[in-house]
Length: 298
Ligand SMILES: Nc1ncnc2c1ncn2[C@@H]1O[C@H](COP(=O)(O)OP(=O)(O)O)[C@@H](O)[C@H]1O
Ligand SMILES: [Mg+2]
Image 1 (cartoon, rainbow, N blue to C red):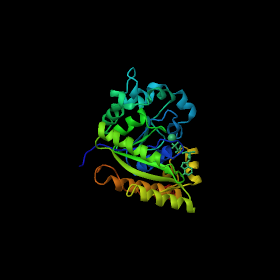
Image 2: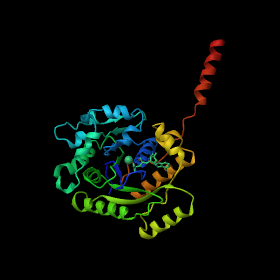
Image 3: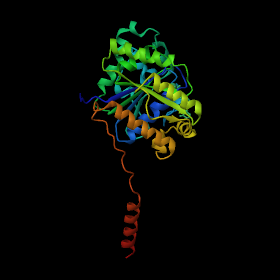
Image 4: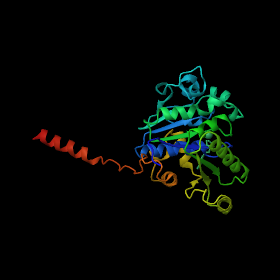
């Protein structure tokens, strides 16, 4: 089943502080580093993803007119023109449709009662599908309209779960929500599974991991994201982890996560670029300058 549509991933859990936005930020950065044209879409009215990527910050996002944000995809009085709602970040191949507070009023608690809104994100992604290889969507910390619309647009849903979150009811709720979207609007949607986030080398975290593997066999990713300060630093530098430090332990965890995500998508998205480009050697240009200088001197 090969097609030219971008790979569309959603990060969702019904709680805050799980690492949803961090996952989108870092997977998006890694996709772009591997030369994929990548679009981030923020559907969380809190807009933390939008605020945490260069050149954006809380002030720019607060002052952003709603019709230049993801709101335009949901509000039928606005024009959802990609040229207006897609913004370039400071990083090559990485664009974003930012969120803003005005999005709150579209997050209806019962998504199935809001016909056309359910499909608005999917239509938008379809419209820009020849411009991107990868689309990564962030969602609010609940299972309502905006998460529903994100899932209608998606191929896969990934659920970040902090390593000490023993309330596995939350995971079941996300899974059921994915099944609801599958049954009603998007038969191709798949739950990729659980990404254990903020893992520490402590016994209780290992016990937790084993418990999840027992409960959700094959749905717990091998890749884990450790609890580590570099992730916080990369947010404060507004630079995704591997666009900043790909080779430290935190960067390597993102690389392994991206690899596993691609592996779990199988052959379904042949357009996605997998190779990590080799860093460009800088010494050559220096040599040329020296040669030129020597020639001039002679
Ligand atoms: N692996 C990690 N190590 C350290 N801090 C993390 C990690 N993942 C997320 N954080 C921090 O935890 C907080 C919540 O993460 P975030 O991705 O915003 O969660 P969510 O989007 O689910 O609310 C943020 O301050 C973020 O910087
Ligand atoms: Mg978030």
